[in-house]
Length: 305
Image (tube, rainbow, N blue to C red; front, side, top):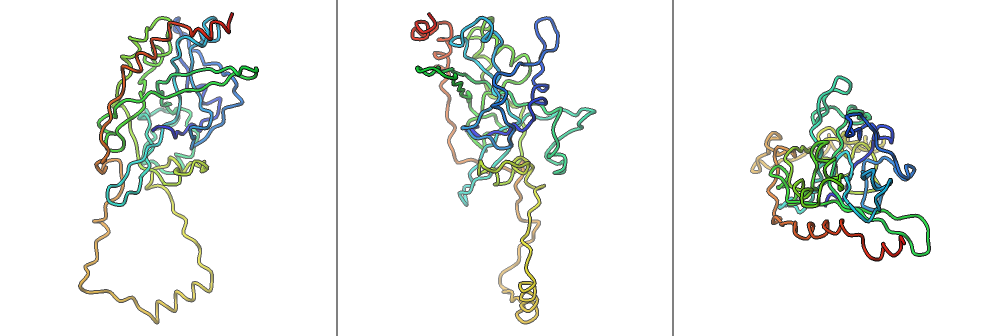
């Protein structure tokens, strides 16, 4: 789950969105490592490169083998709810509620499609707790970085869509404490791993089902997506006119016509109950894994020597 995300902000905008205050209270921006590997996308699959925050200590004086906590960044993530009746899956875009600003105004599910296609200079990025690893090829070459997003039981508002959700770090303080492995122990950091209710979502088009589709339509609210009807040829139009006059539609009087107003519409307010049972996470396993951050693996110690 949460393997499909959107992170379409240009690199400079993404950098500004990650601004933080250091211990002196001064605003700073994160520094990129291998910036050319990042490319914006409305539809990132698990095989693509995603922006991840690491502590600055990793690149100054602390080996990467310690404190493997990271923060995975995204505009939001996609999740699919299975319909019990048709077995079809309805995709949703899940993200932080956005705060109204003088520059960008408020952005919500009711805004027009032209608003959703703009670059969101004030968009609040979704910050998900993760763990990372770094592998060095034995024959030499570039280091390979990988990460995994930590998941927890879904919050109440998302439980009908999926039983699990990413461990979301809500606020700059939570992000800083998760990354600060030097001052915050693994046991203390685990207190940040829990379901978060400060989340919003809306249904989107099934165009997101194919990871090759990379357009704003992937995250535009479903009711704002304009469906393009195929244009009929002149011969088809003549045929339709002939059928309309020569072969009128017959209606069965015994079959009442259902009012369009009675047809249920997808919305984030009307969710079908998910048939999936809630799964409980293995907090103990995660805690044992994180405790290893205080001991550098023997193989890596030998290699570093």
